[in-house]
Amino acid sequence: MTRASTTLIRLSVATILGGAAMLWSGHSPLTTQASLVSSADARIGRPLTPMSYAGVARRTTRRAVVGGAVAAGAVAAGTYYAAPVVVAPAVVPRCAQVVDAYGRIATVCR
Image (cartoon, rainbow, N blue to C red):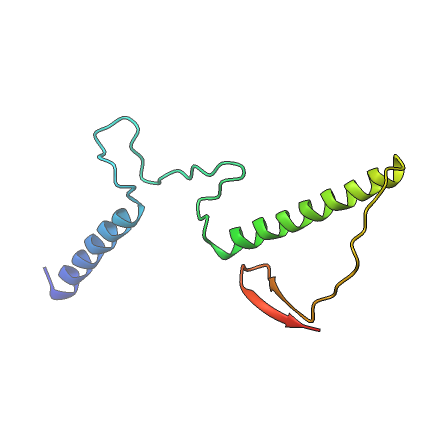
């Protein structure tokens, strides 16, 4: 064997072993449920990465939309059924802390 063919064989073996190591899911291949690729078990409402920016932004937006819808529904129901609505005097603060879609807290002054 020449030096080039020995190098090619070693490189091929290393590539095959490296690829198999990246695809292996950590289970013994002797079991019946073993596979080369692990399965994702995400459920509706429970992402696999609960602390990811996308998950935090999605939940924050959903909570803001649902909270606004509940408040608007309560006001609409109150006007529809002619229930007395108590309105507090409007006190507008100059500065307020707000949370953006990524969960960061910022102070906004107007």
